[in-house]
Length: 93
Image (cartoon, rainbow, N blue to C red; front, side, top):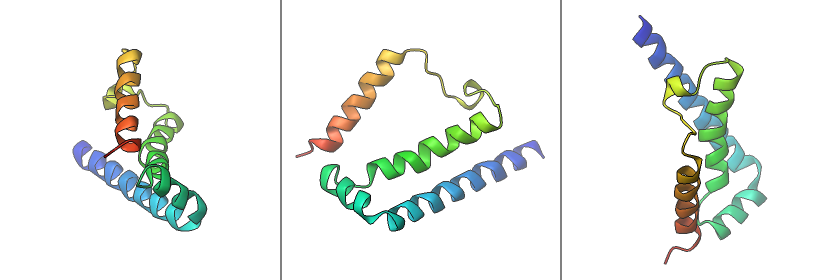
């Protein structure tokens, strides 16, 4: 039963993230156009919907991020990886 409830939680969060992503893309066309010009895709909208929303749910339910596999311990390595990925999006050939 615990696995089923975990699956339902993940499915509900994924569906709400997808709905938020689509609503943001349709609702704010100026930001969507700017993102496509700069990044080539709606990068910030996806970041907000698929990363920020689940983190907000974890914070609102007062759950530990480490129980869900999120660890921010080697911060320099995470920032280096994120900057490299962002540079790859911005400066692709």
